[in-house]
Every structure is written in structure tokens, then in C-alpha cells.
Image (cartoon, rainbow, N blue to C red; front, side, top):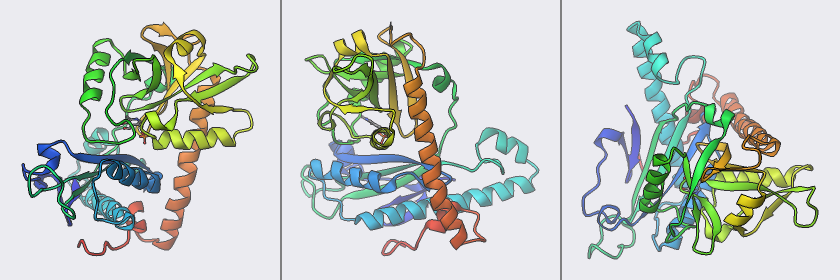
Length: 346
Ligand SMILES: Cc1ncc(COP(=O)(O)O)c(C=O)c1O
């Protein structure tokens, strides 16, 4: 059973429902954020909550719940989900079905369960079915097991295509993914895993659900490589991108440039490219529109970036998980150890 939070209550996901007159349904007026856990600890939760509120602010959607309450709700949903999971595992093992259960989920006794978390806000019900009525926003938090994806794409690299579609508000994580879904339909038809947005001037921004970095020769010194990503104001500022930028800036051997990039420049000069997102982490790109990037193989800069990211993700969450475990030694659930009571929503 999957637990969720909806407008002040915790309930099984199967029982959660919105009125058809919710502005999210009627007008597609809503925002969301999506993050994952490492060691059961939400990764960079503060950044995701900040982006969630920024998305809402940019479309004039007032979210009445404070950032502290949002964090508390996330922790509570996770804690309840883990408790529920522990109960269902106990029941499963007492039925002698444990082998079957652990072969179909990633929740064996040795592999900790990881979760994907979605925080969603919509305009809620409005007095005139159009303009949002202050204080009536819908708020939902859902968790689902992180699907353990086959790691092959990270070992082999992936192919992507470009798409000439314009996005209405690229800096907002809107619930409206029409453009993205249409672009991904094109990508899937051509055997690609992502579509890269390129504007009418031929400038690259990001993928449908990923940001992108390129390794390009430095304009000052052709022998030096620079890792380039497009400017903040033309894309969704991914939290993985943000972490990667921090890690590159801290590394003595890597150089970063955040600047406009044209598709021509990429096709003629990029030696490596990689996508970033919460689910894909750092995913090497070996070809764009059938054109190989560099020698068409995963490059050393991409490998280094992935290593830096994985080490950081594990290190930063291990510290939190260890502190939580020390504070609550008898508890089997990492997130419930860090969860506190949620004021006003029980
Ligand atoms: C348009 C877009 N860009 C980038 C990303 C990557 O963001 P993050 O790294 O926070 O997962 C996403 C995530 O879904 C996205 O939808």
C-alpha cells in the first residue's frame, strides 16, 4: 500500500481524490517537485522545496503551507510509508513468500528501499473556476519506490535527439508536460532516451526532464576543456545540475562555464556530453541526432563527474542517516528517525 498526504490528511494513495473542479484539473494550473532518497534520506530537500515555492511564486500560486511544514509532511509520509513497508515485509516473510517478494522489489533485507517523492500544488477550487482563491491551494505529497533501473545506459552512454519546441515557462516546474511528452514521443520513436530543446536561434537549453552539460574546448586555450551548461534563465534549474556545478567548481582539475551554447558549437566541437537529473544522476550522451559526440564513447570528464556526484550523494546522506540512527537506535526506518510530528495536519 502506498501512503500519501492530501490537504491535511494522510491516506492510502488509492483513496486520494481531487474534485474535478480543482484548477489543476480544469486549467492545468499547478506546480510540483520531484526528488529521491539515498539511505532513506531525501536528497537536498531544502533545494527542492525552495524550487517548488519559486515555481509557484512565478505563476502567482500562493501556497499557504510554510517550507518547514512541507519538509515535515515529506518526512512524515516517508516515515509512514517505511513503517507500512516494514509491516508488509513482516507479513510477507511469515507467509514464507520472502524470496518471491524480494525478487520483485528492491526491498530485500540487505538492500535498503529508496523512495521517489513528489510534492504537488494546484490552484484548488476557485470561486469562478478560473482565478485561484487565496488559501485554497491543493497540496499533495506522494512517495513511490525508486525503480532500480538497469545501469546499462550509464555504462554504454545514450543517444538523444533535438526538438525545436518552445517551452512557455522554462524556469517553472509546471504540472503541464504537454511539450515534453510530445518531444519524448518523437525521441522514443527514433530510439533515443531524451529530447534536447533547441530554440529558433539554434541555442540549446535542456532536455524534457534533464539538464545537459557539454565538454568543449576552451576559447582561450584549445588544449583545455571546459564543462559548459546553458544559463539559468532559459531552463529549469535542476537540483542535480546545481550540485554538479558546485562539485565542478570545487574540483581543481575541472573548469565550468555557464553560458549560451549553440547546437552548431556542440555538433562541431563537443568532445563529451552528459544529462543530469534526480533519477538519471549523471548520464553520458554519446550521440545527438545520430551524430557522435567526440569519439562516440563515454569520456573521462563525464566519468569523473559521475563519480564526484555519486560520492557526494552517498556521503551527504550517510551523515544524516547516521545522525538519525544515533538519535533513535531502536528504529528500523531511517526517515521515521528523522521525522518529527507534523503540526496542524494530524
Ligand atoms: C525540464 C526539466 N529540466 C531538468 C530537470 C532535472 O531536475 P532535477 O535535477 O532537479 O531532477 C527536470 C526534472 O524533472 C525537468 O523536468
